[in-house]
Each structure stands twice: as structure tokens, then as C-alpha cells.
Image 1 (tube, helix red, strand yellow):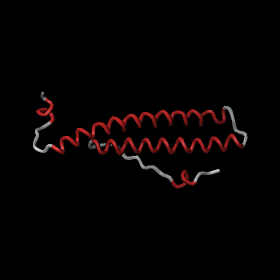
Image 2 (cartoon, rainbow, N blue to C red):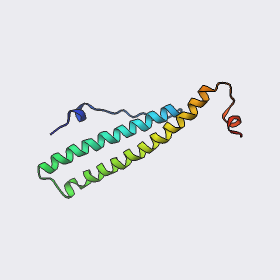
Image 3 (tube, rainbow, N blue to C red):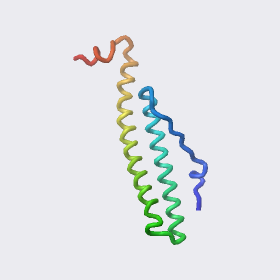
Image 4 (cartoon, rainbow, N blue to C red):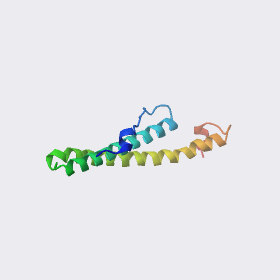
Amino acid sequence: MTSPELESGTTAVTVGEGGLGAYIQFAQGMHDACQQGFDACEVTLADMQSRGWFGEKTAGLERGQEALATARGAFTEMLEALEQAKAVAEAYAANVGAGDRESVTNL
């Protein structure tokens, strides 16, 4: 019992350094990696259970899947917050010559 998406799907996660674009890319990569892991757990757990594996033999897998779902949710929150920060970058880009951050925010 295998899933074609799981066999061919890979997610490369790069370290988020250098600014907003890199942070968004990192958060998206981590989100996607958690989703792939969650999906792989689901397929594996279903296969194990269909073959009579239960209890302590699958408990770690079930906890791991739950942890991946929690982590995926955290990276979703991170992505949403970073997407909001894009408005700041877009505003700076649209107002060339408006000054540096300190002078622009000194109301």
C-alpha cells in the first residue's frame, strides 16, 4: 500500500537567512515537509493497522503524526504573519526616497 505522491514527493528545506523572502521560503518548506511527513505517517499507519499492528507498536507513529500536525500548524501561523509583513516591504518599494524606517515611523 503505497502512495505515488509520497514516493515521488520530496521537500527541500533551506535555512531562512537574509530577510523576509528567505523567511517565507523557510516557513513554506517546513510546512510542506511537515505535511509530507504527516501524509507518510497516515499511509504507514493505515497499512500497519490493516496488517494487525496496534498498541505500543504504532503508538510512536501516532504521536509522531500528531506532532507533525502541530508543527504544520505553527508554520502556517508563521507564514500568515510573514505574509502580513510583505505589506511593509511593498510600501517601502512603492515609496522610493521616503526615508529610512526610523524616520518613516516617527509620527
